[in-house]
Amino acid sequence: MESPLTFAAWSASLTARGFTVLPSSHAVPIELWLRTPRNEVLHLRARGTSVTLRRFPAAALAGLILRSECDCEEHRTAGATTRTTLAPGAVPLAEATFDGAAELGWVGYQAGLLDVPSAAALFDRLLSDVLPDAITRVA
View 1 (cartoon, one colour):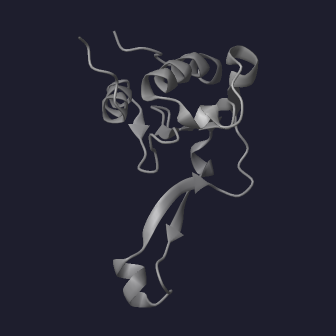
View 2 (view 1 turned 90 degrees about the horizontal axis):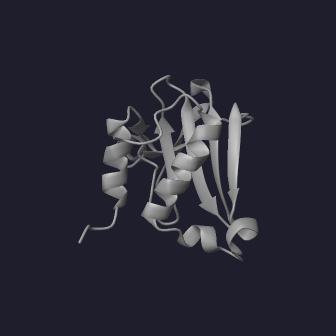
């Protein structure tokens, strides 16, 4: 029996395809931040009843500094972390959306419950619209 695709295994396969998986990516709910081999940014987000993949220029990527407790020098150097986000006003170069409500009858927040194998399949489906010359699958 083949084991189900995990988020770590999916990340590894994306890396093998030439993408860089950025640290703010997570499995529940699915949110994937990637740098493409052309240094563009891909953002996959599963929320509500839809899954959306957007492609942005490299300059659209920003790091939001998350500080704890206060803004003193000690916390800035020891406790500050960053979260990958988009610069204010960033406009996607391309966008593709899977409408789960229309195609599968999803209601409410079902996209947020998407498992990794389903998200990986939707990513490949949307990738062909957002980045047509990308390698969509590993052989």
